Image (cartoon, rainbow, N blue to C red):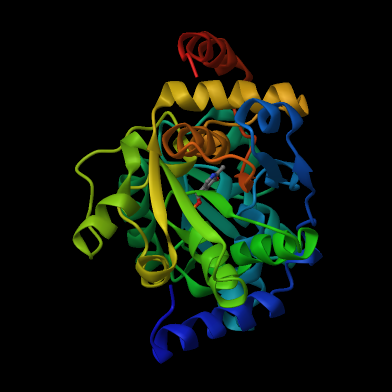
Length: 335
Ligand SMILES: *Cc1c(COP(=O)(O)O)cnc(C)c1O
């Protein structure tokens, strides 16, 4: 929790940026929807923040637009470049088209075809390079140096973090009543940093719980030793969060604003995709189901009852063909 004056000042700085972020020129205010089946099974009130309903089917459009809209005329003219496992890429592509900026996007070779097409269909250039995000990132930074295009980080940028923080602004307005915890999926930490900054400034009693894939738990690793560490390898089933190192700007906030981090397995993600489907009749991508998987584990471990818990349902970009695998693994997961 913010204790020092400089921590409080940092949060205030972000709250101001969040309140001023013009994301609604492109993003939509998404519903905060009761998950009735999950609520009944878990004995707690579970609310889903439906970021899968954004124009690009994930919240990334918020941060991408807030970053691009603040670029100078000169930066806009040189164009932008980014590296992304997919959802940030689609956000940047759409925001760039909206603002008339040329965009080039480096994506790992493992990126689902659907996300590659999502970029190309929005008029951006997709460059496929590297086995996973860290390799794509290194290549994009190199290209940025060579071409003079502005690099747009998927998470390690104050304007991106502020854009993602608008999710929290909506949640607190949509739900002014009792709120015990918000569960947030974590990749590079932009989303959780924006949410945590806003919530801890205004309602510090609300717990912020990060949820990571067991195969890319870079925030948990960083909090354990008190500094950012780089994971030797990352698993890519939850491709939206396959990041080896938590962002520097995000970690500055997370180190005093995140109450707890939970890690979940791929099978738990598959089961959570099914749970969300049962309650909403919509399909989430693996990263999008992290928060629900985290809530289930939290309730199982703590025995919490009667609490109001929010899960960020962060994205829906999944290849239709991989649903067979998801359905099989969901069946194998008991809880
Ligand atoms: C990017 C992403 C995340 C994680 O966001 P970070 O800001 O990288 O922590 C979670 N879910 C989905 C669907 C994403 O695309």
